[in-house]
Amino acid sequence: MKFCVESGELNEALAVVTKALSSSNETPVLRGIYISAFDNELYLKCSDSSVQIETTIPALVEEDGAAVMPGRLMADLVRRMRGDKIDFETIDEYSMKIENGKSKSVLQFFSPDTYPKMEEIRSDISFNIKQNLFRSMIKQTAFSCGDEDAKPILRGVLMEFTEEGFLNLIALDGFRLAKRSERVSVNGEMRNAVVPAKTMNDISNILSDTEDEVTITLSATHITVDLGNTKIKARLIKGDYINYKNIISRKSASRVIVNRNEFIESLDLVWLIAKENNNNVIKLEFDDGMMYISARSEAGSINENVAVNITGTPIEIAFNAKYFIDIAKSVEDEMIALNFNTSVTPCVVEPVNGESFFYLILPIRLMRS
Image 1 (tube, rainbow, N blue to C red):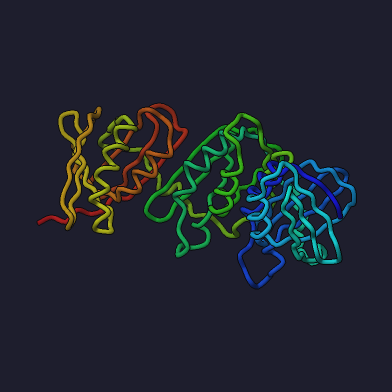
Image 2 (image 1 turned 180 degrees about the horizontal axis):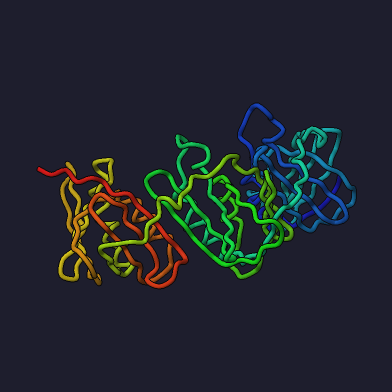
Protein backbone atom coordinates (compact mmCIF):
# COMPACT_ATOMS: atom_id res chain seq x y z
CA MET A 1 0.00 0.00 0.00
CA LYS A 2 1.27 3.46 -0.94
CA PHE A 3 -0.64 6.74 -0.90
CA CYS A 4 -0.44 10.45 -0.14
CA VAL A 5 -3.09 12.61 1.61
CA GLU A 6 -3.57 16.21 2.67
CA SER A 7 -2.70 16.45 6.37
CA GLY A 8 -5.64 18.76 7.14
CA GLU A 9 -8.18 16.43 5.56
CA LEU A 10 -6.67 13.43 7.30
CA ASN A 11 -6.77 15.19 10.67
CA GLU A 12 -10.45 16.05 10.21
CA ALA A 13 -11.25 12.47 9.20
CA LEU A 14 -9.38 11.03 12.19
CA ALA A 15 -11.18 13.41 14.56
CA VAL A 16 -14.49 12.06 13.25
CA VAL A 17 -13.85 8.31 13.20
CA THR A 18 -11.93 8.10 16.49
CA LYS A 19 -15.12 9.05 18.34
CA ALA A 20 -15.96 5.34 17.95
CA LEU A 21 -12.47 4.09 18.86
CA SER A 22 -12.62 1.34 21.47
CA SER A 23 -10.59 1.53 24.68
CA SER A 24 -11.15 -2.13 25.57
CA ASN A 25 -8.19 -4.44 26.01
CA GLU A 26 -10.36 -7.49 25.27
CA THR A 27 -10.26 -6.89 21.51
CA PRO A 28 -6.95 -5.07 20.76
CA VAL A 29 -7.69 -4.72 17.05
CA LEU A 30 -10.69 -2.46 17.86
CA ARG A 31 -8.26 0.01 19.41
CA GLY A 32 -7.02 0.55 15.87
CA ILE A 33 -8.13 2.57 12.87
CA TYR A 34 -8.99 0.56 9.78
CA ILE A 35 -7.70 2.26 6.63
CA SER A 36 -8.07 1.22 3.02
CA ALA A 37 -6.54 2.99 0.02
CA PHE A 38 -8.26 2.37 -3.30
CA ASP A 39 -9.18 4.27 -6.46
CA ASN A 40 -7.70 7.57 -5.22
CA GLU A 41 -9.68 7.49 -1.99
CA LEU A 42 -8.74 6.71 1.60
CA TYR A 43 -11.45 4.97 3.60
CA LEU A 44 -11.20 5.08 7.42
CA LYS A 45 -13.35 3.50 10.10
CA CYS A 46 -13.39 2.85 13.84
CA SER A 47 -15.72 0.68 15.88
CA ASP A 48 -16.22 -0.27 19.51
CA SER A 49 -18.52 -3.15 18.38
CA SER A 50 -21.67 -1.13 19.19
CA VAL A 51 -20.92 2.01 17.14
CA GLN A 52 -19.05 2.28 13.83
CA ILE A 53 -18.03 5.56 12.22
CA GLU A 54 -16.58 5.56 8.72
CA THR A 55 -15.50 8.30 6.33
CA THR A 56 -13.76 8.75 2.98
CA ILE A 57 -11.30 11.43 1.87
CA PRO A 58 -9.41 12.03 -1.39
CA ALA A 59 -5.94 10.47 -1.70
CA LEU A 60 -3.29 9.96 -4.34
CA VAL A 61 -3.07 6.16 -4.35
CA GLU A 62 -0.13 4.46 -6.04
CA GLU A 63 -0.68 1.01 -4.54
CA ASP A 64 -3.99 -0.29 -3.15
CA GLY A 65 -4.11 -1.90 0.25
CA ALA A 66 -5.53 -1.94 3.76
CA ALA A 67 -4.25 -1.97 7.34
CA VAL A 68 -5.39 -1.45 10.92
CA MET A 69 -3.20 1.29 12.37
CA PRO A 70 -2.66 1.89 16.11
CA GLY A 71 -5.53 4.27 16.85
CA ARG A 72 -4.51 6.89 19.39
CA LEU A 73 -0.87 6.82 18.35
CA MET A 74 -1.65 7.44 14.69
CA ALA A 75 -4.14 10.22 15.48
CA ASP A 76 -1.70 11.94 17.86
CA LEU A 77 1.20 11.57 15.44
CA VAL A 78 -0.70 12.97 12.45
CA ARG A 79 -2.07 15.87 14.52
CA ARG A 80 1.46 16.98 15.40
CA MET A 81 2.88 16.75 11.89
CA ARG A 82 3.69 20.10 10.28
CA GLY A 83 3.72 19.59 6.51
CA ASP A 84 0.75 19.90 4.15
CA LYS A 85 0.99 16.35 2.83
CA ILE A 86 1.62 12.98 4.45
CA ASP A 87 2.98 9.93 2.63
CA PHE A 88 2.17 6.37 3.73
CA GLU A 89 3.89 3.23 2.45
CA THR A 90 4.05 -0.33 3.72
CA ILE A 91 7.62 -1.55 4.04
CA ASP A 92 6.80 -5.13 5.06
CA GLU A 93 3.81 -7.23 6.06
CA TYR A 94 3.12 -5.36 9.32
CA SER A 95 5.08 -2.07 9.12
CA MET A 96 3.94 1.29 7.73
CA LYS A 97 6.31 4.16 6.90
CA ILE A 98 4.86 7.64 7.41
CA GLU A 99 6.68 10.69 6.04
CA ASN A 100 5.85 14.36 6.48
CA GLY A 101 8.51 16.90 5.62
CA LYS A 102 11.52 16.14 7.81
CA SER A 103 9.54 13.67 9.94
CA LYS A 104 9.79 9.94 9.25
CA SER A 105 8.04 7.31 11.36
CA VAL A 106 7.41 3.60 11.20
CA LEU A 107 4.32 2.13 12.88
CA GLN A 108 3.36 -1.49 13.32
CA PHE A 109 -0.15 -2.43 12.22
CA PHE A 110 -2.68 -5.28 12.45
CA SER A 111 -3.80 -7.33 9.50
CA PRO A 112 -7.04 -5.86 8.08
CA ASP A 113 -8.47 -9.39 7.94
CA THR A 114 -8.67 -9.42 11.76
CA TYR A 115 -10.91 -6.34 11.96
CA PRO A 116 -14.53 -7.30 12.81
CA LYS A 117 -17.21 -6.36 10.30
CA MET A 118 -20.51 -4.84 11.34
CA GLU A 119 -23.35 -6.76 9.76
CA GLU A 120 -25.22 -5.30 6.83
CA ILE A 121 -28.27 -3.31 7.95
CA ARG A 122 -31.57 -3.56 6.10
CA SER A 123 -33.57 -0.38 6.52
CA ASP A 124 -37.21 -0.45 7.63
CA ILE A 125 -37.66 3.32 7.82
CA SER A 126 -35.76 6.36 6.56
CA PHE A 127 -36.11 10.11 6.54
CA ASN A 128 -34.11 13.23 5.70
CA ILE A 129 -33.65 16.12 8.09
CA LYS A 130 -31.51 19.25 8.16
CA GLN A 131 -28.28 18.69 10.06
CA ASN A 132 -28.61 21.75 12.28
CA LEU A 133 -32.19 20.83 13.16
CA PHE A 134 -31.43 17.24 14.15
CA ARG A 135 -28.36 18.45 16.03
CA SER A 136 -30.45 20.86 18.09
CA MET A 137 -33.06 18.15 18.78
CA ILE A 138 -30.35 15.90 20.22
CA LYS A 139 -28.76 18.65 22.31
CA GLN A 140 -32.16 19.54 23.74
CA THR A 141 -32.98 16.01 24.91
CA ALA A 142 -30.00 13.68 25.38
CA PHE A 143 -28.85 15.38 28.59
CA SER A 144 -31.99 14.06 30.33
CA CYS A 145 -31.02 10.39 29.85
CA GLY A 146 -30.18 8.26 32.86
CA ASP A 147 -26.58 7.75 33.99
CA GLU A 148 -24.59 4.51 34.15
CA ASP A 149 -26.58 3.31 37.17
CA ALA A 150 -29.93 3.69 35.42
CA LYS A 151 -31.80 0.91 33.63
CA PRO A 152 -30.35 0.36 30.13
CA ILE A 153 -33.54 1.58 28.43
CA LEU A 154 -33.26 4.92 30.28
CA ARG A 155 -29.72 5.39 29.04
CA GLY A 156 -31.09 5.98 25.55
CA VAL A 157 -33.15 8.50 23.58
CA LEU A 158 -36.47 7.32 22.22
CA MET A 159 -37.09 8.17 18.55
CA GLU A 160 -40.86 8.12 18.23
CA PHE A 161 -42.80 8.62 15.00
CA THR A 162 -46.39 9.82 15.17
CA GLU A 163 -49.27 9.34 12.75
CA GLU A 164 -49.46 13.14 12.47
CA GLY A 165 -46.02 13.15 10.81
CA PHE A 166 -43.83 14.21 13.73
CA LEU A 167 -40.55 12.84 15.02
CA ASN A 168 -40.36 13.03 18.80
CA LEU A 169 -37.09 12.62 20.70
CA ILE A 170 -37.76 11.59 24.31
CA ALA A 171 -35.33 11.24 27.22
CA LEU A 172 -35.98 10.73 30.94
CA ASP A 173 -34.07 9.65 34.02
CA GLY A 174 -36.75 9.33 36.70
CA PHE A 175 -36.41 12.95 37.86
CA ARG A 176 -36.94 14.83 34.60
CA LEU A 177 -38.27 14.30 31.11
CA ALA A 178 -37.34 16.01 27.84
CA LYS A 179 -39.35 15.94 24.62
CA ARG A 180 -38.50 17.63 21.32
CA SER A 181 -40.73 17.45 18.22
CA GLU A 182 -40.28 18.26 14.54
CA ARG A 183 -42.25 17.32 11.45
CA VAL A 184 -40.53 14.81 9.12
CA SER A 185 -41.50 12.91 6.00
CA VAL A 186 -40.94 9.19 6.58
CA ASN A 187 -40.34 6.45 4.02
CA GLY A 188 -41.17 2.90 5.01
CA GLU A 189 -42.84 1.23 7.96
CA MET A 190 -42.88 3.47 11.04
CA ARG A 191 -40.80 1.96 13.82
CA ASN A 192 -39.79 3.53 17.13
CA ALA A 193 -36.21 3.07 18.31
CA VAL A 194 -34.11 3.72 21.41
CA VAL A 195 -30.64 5.05 20.59
CA PRO A 196 -27.89 5.12 23.27
CA ALA A 197 -27.31 8.64 24.57
CA LYS A 198 -23.58 8.37 23.83
CA THR A 199 -24.34 7.51 20.22
CA MET A 200 -26.72 10.46 19.98
CA ASN A 201 -24.06 12.80 21.34
CA ASP A 202 -21.50 11.40 18.88
CA ILE A 203 -23.96 12.04 16.06
CA SER A 204 -24.57 15.58 17.30
CA ASN A 205 -20.84 16.30 17.44
CA ILE A 206 -20.36 15.14 13.84
CA LEU A 207 -23.36 16.98 12.36
CA SER A 208 -22.69 20.46 11.01
CA ASP A 209 -24.53 23.63 11.96
CA THR A 210 -25.89 23.99 8.41
CA GLU A 211 -29.13 23.26 6.60
CA ASP A 212 -27.50 20.45 4.60
CA GLU A 213 -29.63 17.33 4.90
CA VAL A 214 -28.65 14.06 6.53
CA THR A 215 -30.34 10.72 5.80
CA ILE A 216 -31.28 8.59 8.80
CA THR A 217 -32.34 4.96 8.47
CA LEU A 218 -33.56 2.55 11.13
CA SER A 219 -33.85 -1.21 11.27
CA ALA A 220 -34.96 -3.47 14.09
CA THR A 221 -31.43 -3.44 15.52
CA HIS A 222 -29.46 -0.47 14.13
CA ILE A 223 -29.49 3.21 13.23
CA THR A 224 -27.48 4.59 10.30
CA VAL A 225 -26.75 8.27 9.81
CA ASP A 226 -25.52 9.06 6.29
CA LEU A 227 -23.80 12.40 5.68
CA GLY A 228 -22.45 11.41 2.27
CA ASN A 229 -18.73 10.82 2.80
CA THR A 230 -19.30 9.96 6.46
CA LYS A 231 -21.56 7.30 7.96
CA ILE A 232 -22.38 6.39 11.54
CA LYS A 233 -23.81 2.95 12.28
CA ALA A 234 -24.87 1.97 15.79
CA ARG A 235 -26.77 -0.68 17.67
CA LEU A 236 -30.08 0.22 19.25
CA ILE A 237 -31.04 -0.52 22.85
CA LYS A 238 -33.39 -3.49 23.07
CA GLY A 239 -36.60 -3.34 25.06
CA ASP A 240 -39.78 -1.34 25.44
CA TYR A 241 -39.50 2.29 26.44
CA ILE A 242 -41.41 3.60 29.44
CA ASN A 243 -44.91 4.85 28.64
CA TYR A 244 -43.95 8.48 29.19
CA LYS A 245 -47.37 9.73 28.10
CA ASN A 246 -48.76 8.65 31.49
CA ILE A 247 -46.37 11.15 33.12
CA ILE A 248 -47.26 14.17 30.98
CA SER A 249 -49.96 16.58 32.06
CA ARG A 250 -50.61 20.00 30.52
CA LYS A 251 -52.96 21.18 33.26
CA SER A 252 -51.53 23.95 35.44
CA ALA A 253 -52.70 26.25 38.23
CA SER A 254 -49.92 28.78 37.61
CA ARG A 255 -48.12 29.88 34.45
CA VAL A 256 -44.94 31.95 34.57
CA ILE A 257 -43.36 33.50 31.47
CA VAL A 258 -39.71 34.45 31.91
CA ASN A 259 -36.86 35.77 29.78
CA ARG A 260 -34.60 32.77 29.26
CA ASN A 261 -31.26 34.64 29.40
CA GLU A 262 -32.22 36.51 32.59
CA PHE A 263 -33.35 33.21 34.12
CA ILE A 264 -30.01 31.57 33.24
CA GLU A 265 -28.00 34.45 34.76
CA SER A 266 -29.88 34.20 38.05
CA LEU A 267 -29.75 30.38 38.13
CA ASP A 268 -25.98 30.39 37.54
CA LEU A 269 -25.48 32.74 40.50
CA VAL A 270 -27.78 30.87 42.89
CA TRP A 271 -26.26 27.52 41.90
CA LEU A 272 -22.88 28.66 43.23
CA ILE A 273 -24.33 28.47 46.74
CA ALA A 274 -26.72 25.56 46.14
CA LYS A 275 -24.05 23.14 44.94
CA GLU A 276 -22.03 23.61 48.14
CA ASN A 277 -24.52 21.22 49.80
CA ASN A 278 -24.09 18.68 46.97
CA ASN A 279 -27.86 18.62 46.48
CA ASN A 280 -28.22 21.68 44.21
CA VAL A 281 -31.49 22.71 45.91
CA ILE A 282 -32.96 26.09 45.00
CA LYS A 283 -36.28 27.58 46.04
CA LEU A 284 -38.62 29.51 43.75
CA GLU A 285 -41.26 31.92 44.99
CA PHE A 286 -43.55 34.22 43.02
CA ASP A 287 -45.22 37.47 43.97
CA ASP A 288 -46.40 40.61 42.20
CA GLY A 289 -44.66 40.02 38.86
CA MET A 290 -41.38 38.75 40.33
CA MET A 291 -39.70 35.36 40.62
CA TYR A 292 -37.52 35.04 43.72
CA ILE A 293 -34.77 32.41 43.52
CA SER A 294 -32.84 31.50 46.67
CA ALA A 295 -30.47 28.91 48.09
CA ARG A 296 -28.76 28.19 51.41
CA SER A 297 -25.77 26.07 52.32
CA GLU A 298 -23.07 25.89 54.96
CA ALA A 299 -21.13 28.33 52.80
CA GLY A 300 -23.82 31.02 52.93
CA SER A 301 -27.04 32.12 51.28
CA ILE A 302 -28.13 33.97 48.15
CA ASN A 303 -31.27 35.60 46.77
CA GLU A 304 -31.97 36.61 43.17
CA ASN A 305 -35.08 38.04 41.55
CA VAL A 306 -36.29 38.09 37.96
CA ALA A 307 -39.22 40.00 36.48
CA VAL A 308 -41.84 37.58 35.10
CA ASN A 309 -45.40 37.48 33.84
CA ILE A 310 -47.52 35.45 36.25
CA THR A 311 -51.04 34.11 35.85
CA GLY A 312 -52.75 31.85 38.37
CA THR A 313 -52.03 30.85 41.94
CA PRO A 314 -48.77 31.92 43.69
CA ILE A 315 -46.55 29.00 44.65
CA GLU A 316 -43.41 28.18 46.66
CA ILE A 317 -41.47 25.22 45.28
CA ALA A 318 -37.94 23.75 45.26
CA PHE A 319 -35.91 22.03 42.54
CA ASN A 320 -32.49 20.72 41.62
CA ALA A 321 -30.92 23.83 40.07
CA LYS A 322 -28.94 21.84 37.52
CA TYR A 323 -32.12 20.48 35.94
CA PHE A 324 -33.40 23.99 35.23
CA ILE A 325 -29.98 25.15 34.01
CA ASP A 326 -29.68 22.22 31.58
CA ILE A 327 -33.07 23.04 30.08
CA ALA A 328 -32.67 26.82 29.92
CA LYS A 329 -29.26 26.53 28.23
CA SER A 330 -30.39 23.95 25.69
CA VAL A 331 -33.42 25.75 24.22
CA GLU A 332 -33.14 28.85 22.04
CA ASP A 333 -36.42 30.72 22.59
CA GLU A 334 -36.15 34.22 24.04
CA MET A 335 -39.08 33.60 26.40
CA ILE A 336 -40.10 30.31 28.01
CA ALA A 337 -43.14 29.26 30.05
CA LEU A 338 -43.01 27.49 33.43
CA ASN A 339 -46.21 25.73 34.49
CA PHE A 340 -46.94 24.68 38.08
CA ASN A 341 -49.77 22.97 39.98
CA THR A 342 -48.64 22.40 43.58
CA SER A 343 -45.36 22.40 45.50
CA VAL A 344 -45.15 18.60 45.22
CA THR A 345 -46.14 18.10 41.55
CA PRO A 346 -43.85 18.48 38.52
CA CYS A 347 -43.05 21.73 36.75
CA VAL A 348 -43.53 21.78 32.99
CA VAL A 349 -41.30 23.97 30.81
CA GLU A 350 -42.55 24.67 27.29
CA PRO A 351 -42.57 27.34 24.58
CA VAL A 352 -44.77 30.36 25.10
CA ASN A 353 -46.39 29.41 21.78
CA GLY A 354 -46.42 26.01 20.11
CA GLU A 355 -45.35 22.55 21.25
CA SER A 356 -41.85 22.09 19.81
CA PHE A 357 -40.38 21.16 23.20
CA PHE A 358 -41.67 19.91 26.54
CA TYR A 359 -39.71 19.43 29.77
CA LEU A 360 -40.93 18.01 33.05
CA ILE A 361 -39.00 18.36 36.32
CA LEU A 362 -39.88 16.73 39.63
CA PRO A 363 -39.70 19.10 42.60
CA ILE A 364 -37.88 18.56 45.88
CA ARG A 365 -40.07 18.55 48.97
CA LEU A 366 -39.40 21.60 51.13
CA MET A 367 -38.60 20.91 54.80
CA ARG A 368 -40.84 22.98 57.05
CA SER A 369 -39.52 24.11 60.44
